[in-house]
Image (cartoon, rainbow, N blue to C red; front, side, top):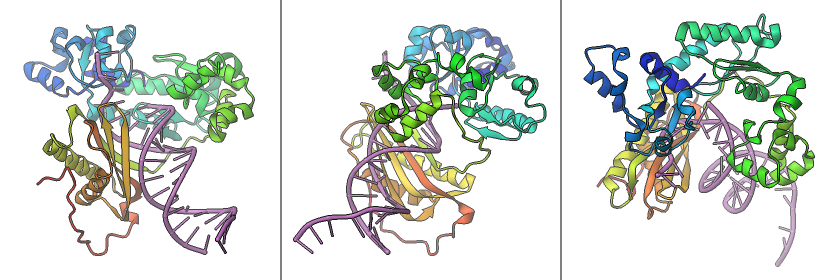
Length: 391
DNA sequence: TCTGGGGTCCTAGGACCC
DNA sequence: TCTGGGGTCCTAGGACCC
């Protein structure tokens, strides 16, 4: 989906069309503020100059999405809000409305599945679709079906998307970037040398910032540079699995199927504080947040019908280093108090001298609640208070 | 100018068992 | 007294993705 979060907001605020807008940060209250102040008129009638500007933004968030006009200023996803404010101070800021985004996410996926049922969910704004068995899926190399999907989505939601059609997921993903927004790109097997090899290594889905730097040091800048290396040399430099995968990827080889269903592996909740907190000085505040995270992850488990056996915590220090600790219990649980207790045990094993900027709670080793025998007798475990426990 | 939140997968060492 | 493989599970960290 093109600039998904921002496009969803533009549907309710069409007066912002064509303007630099960024979505992100915390300020959930912005939308309510606007609606309160202009309670007498619909959202679409709120004057443009009533919207908050990026230069007035204070906070630690990152940008989730920028509209295309904002991207012209170099503003992009995952960029810190403060940096973005310097690049494009006049951009308007809106908070993420997850409810609304998820609603449209479910919507566009349902439309696609109606047309092409073999669809793999790759997050809120992205899917893989297998055209192979869809009637007409091969016409014009897939362009006809791609156009049909675009039209169906646009007709019912007003949103645009970009589609790449290729012999496998790896190339399709790269192809989808070729013609944004609202574009279609067809890449055939024989096009790998001309269309894929000139691309920067970073364009391969699976080569991130770390590998990019390492490749750069080895003087490999493009996909073609990787393809030109012997497989064994890549294995020597990047390890058996990653080196071999990289070689295949550079040659456009990928046999992963389109997976229509999958089971979750873990569920977690985490939060970055408005200011860094100290385990001792801000004990009460941290304790409340910690308990809340446990409660919310337990709610998530119950709502979705899962139980888990590994409870873990995540800490991010003021210097951005991350520490994780986890413990595997004998029995599956979705009980907030049990999660809280186990997470508290984990907490005793980390350094709490440094100030913290983030705290998270995770439950892993999941199983469907319906497929796990319920706990026999509720165990009475002695309560061993941890540092964040309330007195 | 400091860098969100929710995930998956991989690696590597150590415990433990046969 | 010294020394086997093979396998699984647990834990911590890290790379990467949307």
